[in-house]
Image (tube, rainbow, N blue to C red; front, side, top):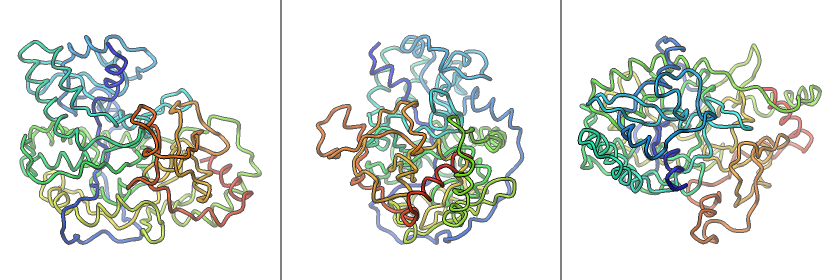
Length: 473
């Protein structure tokens, strides 16, 4: 098997993690938006965290995929370094981001991606569950590979399952190609799936039921799951309020076979939500922070950063604050797209089964995230445009064009982020090659690294102190 095919099998399926929608070219008046300011708390149903962990790793909540027989022929044995504790049966020897299960439509064993496709990543050589994966490659056309799998599927019943999966991958493929490795297409994919689903019955249609999103994918950065225990809204624009499980299970909508199946999956996701809420940020793994400098950094942080990002420790308070675009100044594409010309997607959600107890309505701004373990979550801003926190606190120093190795060990513990190479050109100056996909070009729509200039008023000593304090969170 070629290296390219092996690479694709690590990437072939997207676990949707976001519910917002990107900018659209469809005209229309915006709906009433969520307000700027604090996001209110919504009660969540209780669940069993242990059962939720088992569901994420062993259940077929994304209920279509490739036949296990084809997987074994194409992928074969996988290294034990990709396995994860708590898995049962065939899953015990599958990579952590993939799950084997029996199709609900037949007796065929299938393999699909699970939530950890986007929500687990390696940091300094160790797998961190709940860390957003900022290194996955969504720059290829997945439909080509989905069709290629068919050559390895001969059993008639298995071919029916493969065909269902390949058709749905083909339907969303045009809306899933990012411009840069590491950028996540989840917002666009969610809208593309909505365009094929009946909102009332959740039945899939091969024909589009409404205009899809644009094929230009605006990137998003997968947030850390351990922040969810603090967040009243799941997504950057304060959408994803109310019952969080309805949004967490949106990965299953690609393979939807109706409301009954969705309801059964939802019955498992109260446990999944409880497990996600139990996750804690990892501890700083390098040399211990300087206690004197960290205390000074906490003082600076309290004065300069805590209004939006909250306070920490036993008495810490997170404000769940939406900051308006005019104040935050960061790339507006996701926020503007979610609040202007996406009425058809918001309307679809409001009509759908998913809206029972859940609210997708966005705000014209971004929610400042919690900062527990923020040092592990590079690159920064909602579009992953800034490689280090040091640069986040010093906007004039941010590179316009940059690249990195994507190695989990290539980390700068002083700057708190990925080592990077500044370039003198963007994608327009690079021939079509594998290196082109590694360039982060901040001149592209949706990829800007502007805004969040609050650290510019700090001197170098104050910035260094804040960086030291953030290592303690």
